[in-house]
Image (cartoon, rainbow, N blue to C red; front, side, top):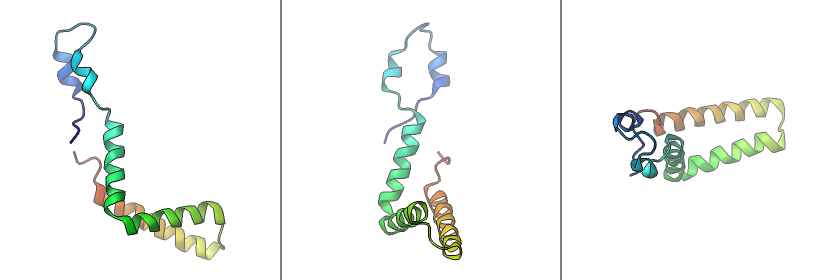
Length: 90
């Protein structure tokens, strides 16, 4: 598991210009992207529903009532993935 950097600890180190431990730090954005991709890989059926729904709404332009239903489904899938992934828990 890749640990994110703790910059408060690094600031306390008494090296004025460069700290060699900064070479091994991974930005928090990459860790969050890895969590999202792992969540998509763990739920392949829901990921395919999400991608299909998103691309149909983006490129196909279905009728208004059908697009509202699909937008509701996309919102439900986004809320489910947000709950399952819990990106900001740790």
